[in-house]
Image (cartoon, rainbow, N blue to C red; front, side):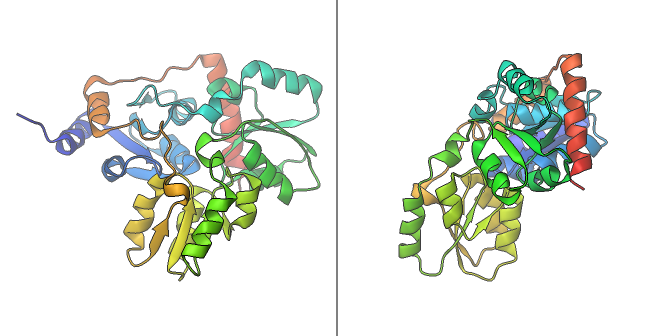
Length: 303
């Protein structure tokens, strides 16, 4: 007899005392069974503040690691253990140490899209929604920003008084978008507004009407009376946008923007994760403690 996965997931969630968190880029059916859906900052806060002792994190590895760093006493499960982040993999601990030696007076700001080892070497973490506020609140003039050169470049444009040393990393999903695709959309859809993520390259950002994190893009669309939007970020965000704006029309450049890793999690994986308590995230305690400081500083400096 075929089981009803959604019903079984809800049953197991109650039985195990678990909470299910899902990033905006997850599959629609995963977002629908989650207790909280959001961007990286929001989910890290939910994971830190929730009463549940078991967190099922439907996202990629660095997100589950961040939850474990903040709440070591909780069991953090990553249903798709091979869901990584190519951008996070572009920054390595040895390279960060070398930069630190070359620029001893610089503060290291790492995008939350980074490994636990890199966070452990950083002074503060940030997300795309709070990076500008955090860097403005840092007293030091010199900033090492990693791993995303595009988010780093976007923040640098707005804080010209600071000196940036920017790592040469990028998101493979956002990098592939070309400004020509935006120009085509403008020609095809009169009056369309373009909302882009800061992980996009500069020509794309310059052509956008709005730049913001996934959560900020959703708010922009929700609060705008325009009828047509080109959403220049991972297309999973459309599930939330369309449900709140059924009368508006939405388009994605180039026929699609899909993150392979964000799409690795299926309902079957969430079911197996709860049933078998897999895959349990483990982090070396020394690394965790150092990374904890960077994440706590993020929550403090964003104020």
